[in-house]
Length: 79
Image (cartoon, rainbow, N blue to C red):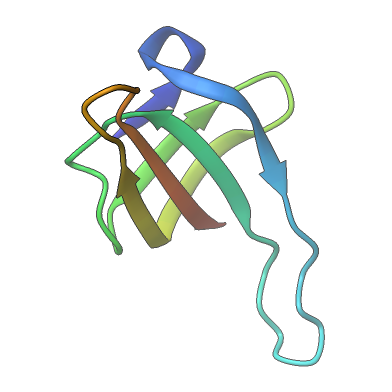
């Protein structure tokens, strides 16, 4: 699933630090307008000025209400 400014990305992806004690790679958290295809395990192609590449979604939440926008937030790790 492509996540880019032209595809509804909200703001700039946030990069986390790697967990050296667990040996896990850094995570990237990205928000976009509702993307129901984004689920844990799905490959994401993130394109922004600060982050670009292929990632695997680990945690995903879909939020919204009748009076606001519907958003998807995904935490992902590099492939």
